[in-house]
Image (cartoon, rainbow, N blue to C red; front, side, top):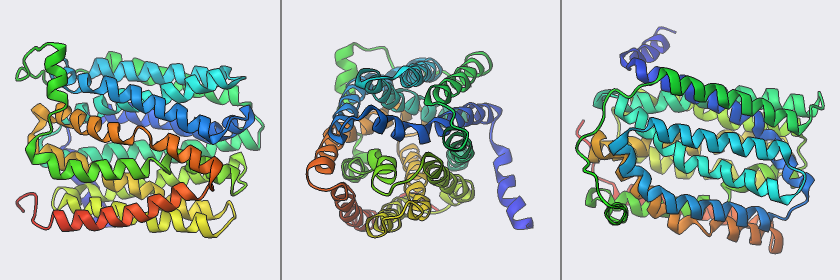
Length: 402
């Protein structure tokens, strides 16, 4: 027990701004988790094909990829807060669209806006945490943020799934509650958070200048950019369809889906909270490789056992894929370029990976409908093993001094 308290005591060095951001992100996480178990049943209720879902997500990725080149330099120049709020407004609009959905039009709008939030608020969230953190505590800050937000996301699906399944609360009310929680978090962000610094190192440039910068990958990040592209392309074949697969192919109820989503969120919450100090001491690329190898536990069980309960076990590993990759990647980039250029560098990497991954959901949707629902997951499994081996081979030398 004493070792556990010592480990969590290491987070006490974080700044006040970091804890405020983590609170806001945790409320966002709860709202997202509360609504998550109801999205797949809503898609099935509207009776759209997986090709339609895949094409909608591809359109969202394409739009997000087009706007994100501008976000990195703008966040570096003008602060992350306004862009965080813009992304939050997109999330609110997405939940409202879900709540009002009766046909494919509003469903597509909800899917589109929810995906765009990842591109806008996601980058602003990462940049805000990075700018509020000292170099020696960044790994802890990123991991604590991810861990507590995912912990909130772990509790919320149990509540949301139970209310939608056992209590028969309509999908409309589920999404309206998530809307209210998100609005509250935005008010908190708007009124209580102020950035600890404004960057003066990024000069004002034209749109052409922004775009030229956006397509320029720092030479120190080229190797990691290569494996990031592969990771994004192949995991984008399966991640967007996991809960749909569990609901449609394994026959899960809304309540069972809520349990699976909760486990998927609890897994990274626990790992992120315990791995944060390790990220500041060990090679981050090892965590990236292990993240890929988590595909063995995430995908094989749902392919060989056609029961919804198997998703409880598989969801542990789906959560670990995310929780190992994100803090390790953020720490790697920060170590290489520093906080002043972090948002731009992250935006450039996201642009590159986003461009190549744009078609993945559409391809996966077509494979799901026309070949087999299992095919996108099989392709991801094979690719993840190859990518993990590549990471270990490329980054054999330590990327940071001990």
